[in-house]
Length: 187
Image (cartoon, rainbow, N blue to C red; front, side, top):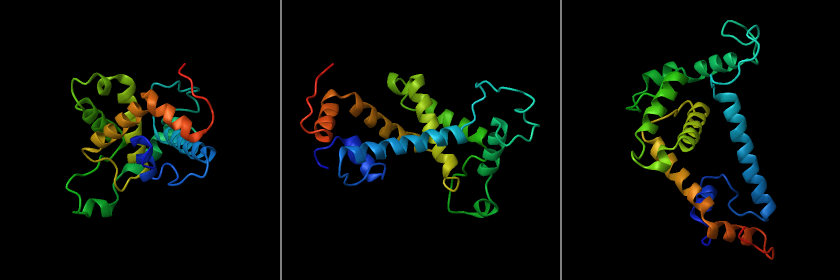
């Protein structure tokens, strides 16, 4: 573990990779599984109005089609509504956003303020990726939801993961460790 790039060590500590993979295949399978779970979470939890809505007869806010994007939207609305116990709780000084729209607005405002002037964190692909990660986390964990400052932690993790992925030496090291004996070329 000590010779691994920081991003790999962090993934192990966060439980995203096995603490001691027996083989490169096991590690790749764990990574692929995490990515599938995240992709399914994005698909089921995030509501994007810029998608083609299809047939308006079966996909509109007044239709009771359980498979429509509107049904998903209303399900998220109900999921994000604070419970009576959460309203009475005095443990949290910051009240989480009550609706997905409010959550998206709060996350968006925090991301706009993230490292002003930094071209990497201000870029649209990075903003979109961080927004998706934060929204999925908040919707999958309604008791915690989103709290101010989570975008800073997510940005730190994202930045390290990105830099390690772009660092040729780290990639070569990972490949050599995962596939001993396989020649590594720089193409």
